[in-house]
Image 1 (cartoon, rainbow, N blue to C red):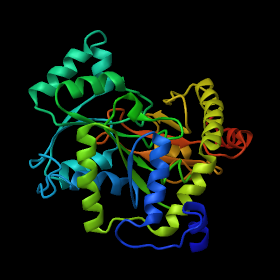
Image 2 (image 1 turned 135 degrees about the horizontal axis):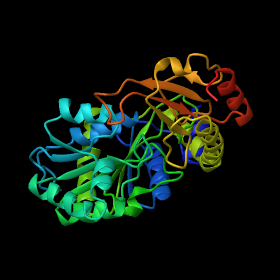
Image 3 (image 1 turned 60 degrees about the vertical axis):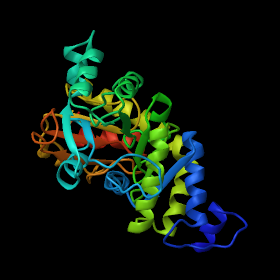
Image 4 (image 1 turned 90 degrees about the horizontal axis):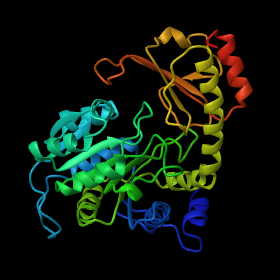
Length: 339
């Protein structure tokens, strides 16, 4: 395995892995940065480790002269952001969290939601705006406009890109300053290992954050295992191919479900389908779809979330469409009397 890592990541060099940044980690971070068309990526042991490491890095003592962030952030967070992220920031960091609902804001104020958003930022002295793009329910905020208004108010924009991954989506191109992504999902793609990344844009705020977060990773020992570098590299080779198959099959499954009278929420790409209002017994007879709370894998899964306290849509079932023959998946849904 170590020889494989050496050849696939840093061909022609000796393998050396240390707790602080090694050349193998550096090489993979540079490869990922090239895919995002940016300068800096930092790897962590999971997607949640990427998120927690970022927020754990503030406030800091300005020992290196890299910035002025000493106080807890005022964070505006979308109410449909992944609930574990919301719980982490609200309960386990010193930051102040204010919630909004981008879907509701755009629906209730279709012509002037930008003014509503601008006033919300100004009235609450927001330092950082955080949202998933798209969110779990397929909604895509107007990221370019969100970034513009955030920057006009002196705030930075941080986006979780895990729902579609770097194979489809690059929020940096739409104005995000910081992007976090769970490579556990689509990038590695097999549901057999965990990794995450923090991606930094070219703004001064993003570069300042990079130095602070890198220090935190080194001092806290939050590096990924060396074997994981190979698994990320393996996944990148087939990422776009797999995402194309996920998307094509998900469309066929979505069409069958809506044809059977079910409401289905979908981002239009990727394999995650949300069926709001469904209970756990909705999936009890499925066999090919496995009961697992994950997505982005080669195999299809289902999960039930009792979410009145977590998300605005209430309870829902998620079907994740994997890489099995779509005919097999439709047969499974038919046998379970779902379609």
